[in-house]
Length: 61
Ligand code: SF4
Image (cartoon, rainbow, N blue to C red; front, side, top):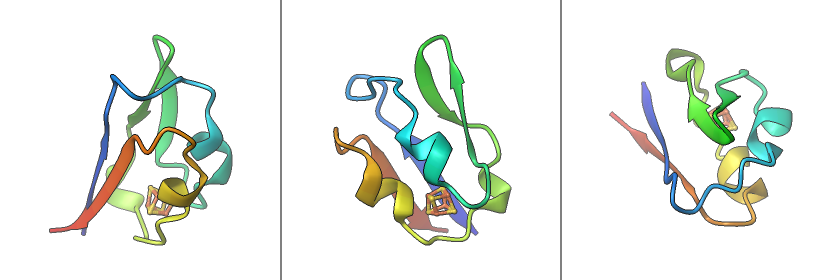
């Protein structure tokens, strides 16, 4: 399993992670990305690569 965290201070809410994540982990809520579906995370780290603000962390737990 993976723990996905979004730093809300850094997130600009433009949703690159939403568009990129193959497992639909993210949703935009109140203008920020939230990992609402973390159980489905594959650990591919595509979200980390695509985030322009370095707001996402993915850790195996
Ligand atoms: S690591 Fe991959 S599967 Fe997990 S949230 Fe990021 S893009 Fe989605």
